[in-house]
Image (tube, rainbow, N blue to C red):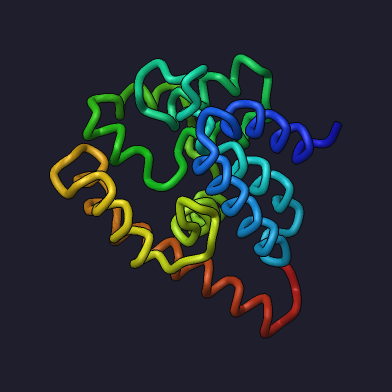
Length: 188
């Protein structure tokens, strides 16, 4: 079984029944990752696997700390998953800032190294341009939706507002790479 087949199967087994909307979102994020394949070259499969797995820590079967990037990454480590996929899941979408809000930043940094910036940016872009239902959106609309859903004064609301400038910057960097690849028709 290939990496993506394994990742999709595992994510589906953890999310599809208990959290069908989260599963739809994960499928949408994976679809966005596939669309970035021309930009990512050899890392395309890795990003898609991380994209479909990025929210498995929400699964009731895995939730330990209540911080889904950490719970998901720890589970993947126990499964012997690809280390780069684990790091992307652990640090997806500015997770260090949310970890700080939760008092878990040192723990996250100690346990999981950051992955290459280009891949972190790509996963941020895929996650923050996908609605909870798996449809495409803009980073601004996604950020607004998150703040409205959780509330501006909650842990998630505070974190996402702090993360907004970096989310927009990551999306801009990815869109710039996509435009460059389209103009030169060569992977970066």
